[in-house]
Image (cartoon, rainbow, N blue to C red; front, side, top):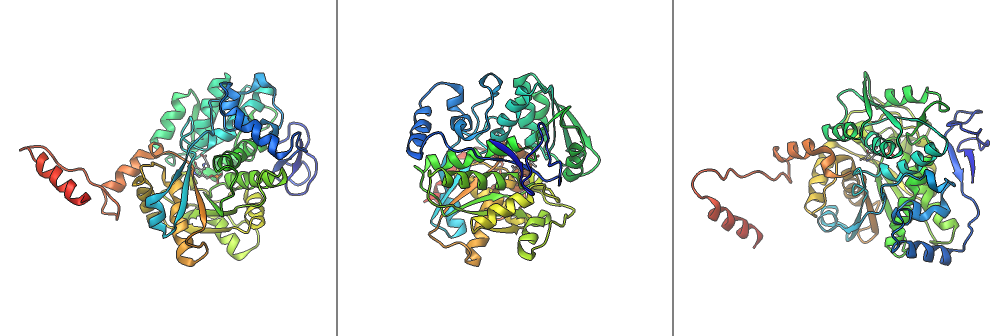
Length: 419
Ligand code: F0G
């Protein structure tokens, strides 16, 4: 597999993280498949019943489609093997009929970052790296810390001071990482990390092409669960735009391999206060960074690094980009909860986006839609608690049941409400 610049096409130098000619992001060019589509599908299917940790991983199961990593370097926590759930309350809320959630929050560290981190960490181990570094709004931090711990590497994360949920920080500390809170936002933290020497430290943000290779496997895992039936739309939240790029690459490669015969459209949804990509998609031109502000802290990002790659995937699939405000994200998150599924605010931008796309007629009522939920509800318990202490539309309140046996009356009331 060749590693090229995604912008000027130049072949990358050994160990580089950016193009030596134009400073663009690098990307792996897929190698010719060793097996035809039917045989590949059969290999993947059989691995689902194997007990080999590589086969059980929803990343390494597709290892024919990944850059080669020596087996002894692979660091896996059985990532990316997550459920696809029918969305009932979510579908009604968006006025759509065929909606499902791909819950990437059901990963070992409770976000989609694990899929990319297993490949980036394994590659770092293979190259003898001793320290992993990233900038993060919290989820990359937790994933990197866990995989580095498994691999016996040191981990240093740069987070925006005051900008990361308590649970994500606690998780990252648990896994033994050094957490450095910087004076500035995520974009500033990433800028600092990009200036480090990739020969000295493994930089595992999504500018690292190995991360993208792992995350593209979510496309294969989704398709496999649908018996390779292609949805009409796959909707993802957009922050730094690594994930939209990765999923788009995965679907494109699946078409090239003959695993599927068409692309799903990629829909990217940003938070209105952090929506430079939505503006760019509307107005054209190049990325104009913004000062990001949103309560969906995971996607509080104003200068997305992977915008060019993501733009190519969205355009190439006939997809679209939009933004939704924080109140819409908050309500959508609570509605997803009513389906018995817990996600963090950034993930709920997908349902809020679908509702807006339906209202605008961008997506038809009966189109087949998959919403990619990127993080688990427990990633930001404080946010959920605050929602339910508010008067928002789907807030659910704690009943004061102290004092004289009010329980019977309470049960009667609950039953009546469900009658
Ligand atoms: N959803 C969640 C839960 C995230 O944590 C992120 C990004 C995104 C969506 C956006 O994905 O950046 O690939 O467009 N979180 C990064 C982090 C920035 O540091 O954890 P993207």
